[in-house]
Image: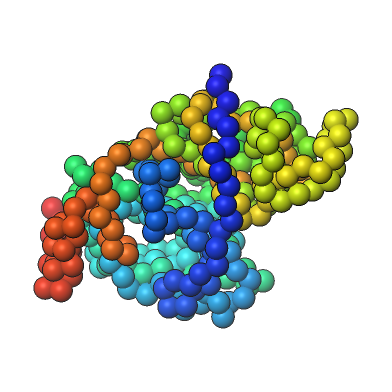
Length: 303
C-alpha cells in the first residue's frame, strides 16, 4: 500500500448564495484540476433559520451533477419536469442535470432550528453533458454503514468501500463518497482508488492526516495512546485536506475523535467553461446554453 501524503489544507470560507443563504464554501469557482471531477463544495450548516430559510429559488443547471447530503433538518426540492420531494435527516440526493433543468431547493430546520448539510458539484464528461436529467433520492436507511473493530463507522453513499457498495450508481467518474467517524485517539488507514483525486473534509473533531511529521491545521496538545503528541497540528472543523497520489490515507484522530467526508473521483481532464450553475466544455457551448435560457429552449423534451 502507498500512503497519500497531504498536498495541502484550507479552511471553508463564509459566503452567501441563493436568496441569502449563509454557508461556507469549501472550494469552487477556481482552478478545478486538483479536485477534478468535482467542481464545488458547500457546507450549509446553520442553526439560525433567518440565515437559510429563503433558500435557493428557481435556477438552472446544465452539464453537471449535484450531490446533496442532509445531516440535520430537511430540504424540499422541485423542478421544471414535475419532480418534487423532501430530503430528510441522513438522506442524499444525486441529481444529474444533464441537458438542463430548472429547480429549487428550500431548506427547513429541525425542531431545534438546525439545518446542516453539504452540496457537492460533480462535472459531467463531454459525452454526457446533454444526457437526460436523472434523480437518485436515497433515504438514510438505505445507506449502508460498516463498523470496524476499533469503532470506526463508515456510511457508504457511492462507490465501494470495505467490500460494500453504496446505493448511488451509474456515475461516470466512478466516485467514492463516504462519511467517516473515527473514535478518539485512533490510528486508521483507509483505502482510496490510486487513479482518483481525493480529499477529506473535516466537519467534527480533528485528526492528523500526515503519515510523516509535517504539521497542518489547528494545534492541540494531547497524549496519544502512550505516545506524546506535545503540540501537534490537527485538521479541525471545516478543514479541507487534499491528498497527493497513492492508494491509502493515514490518520490519527484527536482526543474528541473525528468525522469527515472522504471523497474521490477519477479526473475527467477536460476543458471547463463555467458560468454559475452551467458547466460546459467550450465557450460556444456556454453561449448556446445562455441563448437557450433566453429563448425558452433550455429544457429539452424528454423521451
